[in-house]
Length: 343
Ligand code: DNO
Image (cartoon, rainbow, N blue to C red; front, side):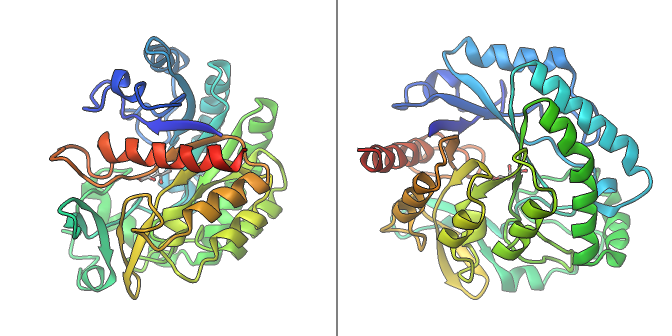
């Protein structure tokens, strides 16, 4: 497995020189963050991102993410142009040597939490989600906001986009995902690119918006419906694992051969549809990290893996979930397990 680390580009407080000092760190997972969803990523800009990373002895091995325009998720007729643009971005990435591309199909909101600095018993803090708090928010009052949202569109359009989703059922959203994949996967195949869909986080509907990358059955459906090795999964333990009903080992088995990227992190279940992110250790969270890595190895996964969110420890301040210290501890913990498995 290729140990990797997410880096938010030159503005990231976490520096490549520091990332490189984490033992066995090889890959950088990044993106071009200022290109709006739906637009083509320019080859020169991709190359400049790639070179800024290789100058520091690391390799840009995964793009996370090329965002999918809302019109594609909504199935609007305008999706055709955005799909063409997506294909062109894939061609440009491939030309630049990037072969793994992560993306998600969550309507409107990417990962959602209710607290970005929830204190843990050891004095550190981390991200948490409490369903009761989400339920209390009126989704259409126009002021919908939660900490840490990655919005893929202008916030002033929030109300109309939420309205538009009222007529999109889960089945329809799934159909729109398949429509998208049927068109982009042939290009990914030609370009030898592995697309890796990220599960929904959390893996259930929020604010009445449908979500479909939530469970084993749906993941199997997506992988089988467009049956190509280029159509794969980002196995994210923390996203899928925040629902105790998801058996992570069974999901790995079901996606065997189609897992192209791994996000490894732990969460502690704190109540019904509620959880808090913990350290990566099996002693702190509810997820069987050792068994997960064993299972990934057993099904032959040997691709890029990154420690996912970390806690904020040692007074570090920065992007919630994406500080240096706890993610470095996470990488080291994961590497220890991987080394042991491989002996
Ligand atoms: C959160 C991340 C997600 C992820 C996207 C992938 O920290 O795991 O934002 O990057 O959902 O498209």
